[in-house]
Length: 473
Image 1 (tube, rainbow, N blue to C red):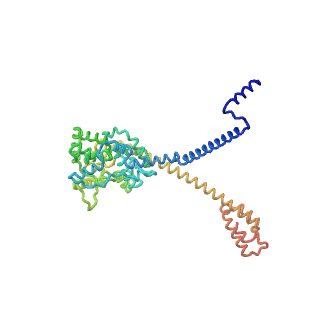
Image 2 (cartoon, helix red, strand yellow):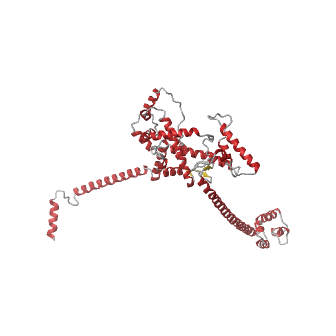
Image 3 (cartoon, rainbow, N blue to C red):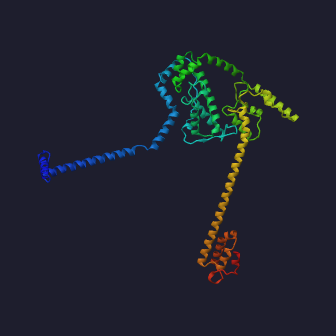
């Protein structure tokens, strides 16, 4: 064992880096190690402080999510991020090049108002409430709210990312759930209005395509010019599909048929952006049942002094004929014939005239019973709320009685301690009715007031036989 220890010692001494304990070299080595350790610790602390500072400067998860939401909404309002990326990647001529081409165009185009974008609706954080009638059509709370809602749906129909134009049939549109989800983000609207909402967006989408064809296809001689005049908000790949579709023989035949049918239409309505559901809702405020003839008159009314493109002589004569039938039936005491149907003919299959979007014969029949059941459910809810209010009022009255009794007891106790009331009076108050006890504080104040004015009773106390004491009973 001793030999092994001595051999280890010899090896250490032979090692050139060996320093004997307690020597100056050993102390110097320890000092250097100490300084190195301090520098290392200081560097670590400095790095830690730097990292903590960086962490504090970073936004929290909530802040980042809010910032992302704001960024997404800003991109949506400005024209949607997908559309913008498509514009950047496309090889379409720039806006400046188009401006130069248009400037060289001999045909001067009249300046028109821009597209409705509804930025205030897309950027707001709160949801606006929309109310429905018994046919699940938006009618409130106000006309302005319904009109704003309709304009908002129009902006969705003109958004290429939500309603792609290269899908040629609305029935094949696969973004309908996304449209409804986004609509629910901006409006507090019942789910029963989903069908009406998507129906309205589909109509606006078809009108949008029709206007695009009129502005960017019919007015130019060939596809090369049309592509150069492509609007910025339409992706290039979608516009190419539209040009191919508009140039097809099938579409051209269908377009000619639709033009001829359009010319045959008579008695155009003058309601503008006001829906038939809103007009019917206004009429029902003053009349329980609104006839088709009354709706026809209300939706064809013309403002005096305003110039219209078409004459309303035909419409006026039809209204006069309807009124003649109604007058004749009123004189005979019969209501067997509907004046509107007699003049305008029977209803067409699949739709109902003068009821607005989304209403058919089957839905109208089903909604009568549905409306009655809804009304009954509403009445039950009202009665339930009234019962809850009655119980709450009873509880509040009970609490008020308890508080009055506690206040009375407290006032009497204070009067007793001050020696301002006779014990017999206290006994009388304790057996009084709750209504009489409630007036005890006022009566006690009268006692104090009378005592301060001066009393002939010794000690200033009221006696049982005193007239003032009788007043308290």
